[in-house]
Image 1 (cartoon, rainbow, N blue to C red):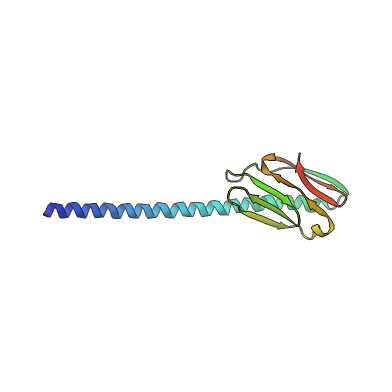
Image 2: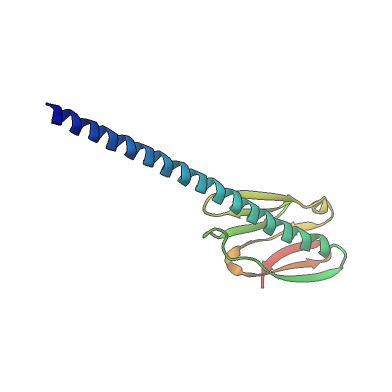
Length: 136
């Protein structure tokens, strides 16, 4: 009987070790997902800030055209760029969305356009009172 108790104790000790290892792996993978989400959000915000900067710069010209390059993918997924009341950058896989204020420009100008990051080369055009984003 004594040998059976020892085997049962060893099995329980093994199961306890497996539960401990599983909890550590789960903890690290959830932390990794959170950090990846924060990094993706920060990169989406930087793209929105870049586009908003070009938008503000275009206001001082009558007719202007700004050519720029954006990353094709952020975190292995494409994203959508939209201009309307706000500059919106939306990750197509995770659904993360960043809205940047147009600083009141939407009241003075007609902001329009929607493109996907797969275009790589984009152009922000200002023609009179209309500002729009298009593929180059």
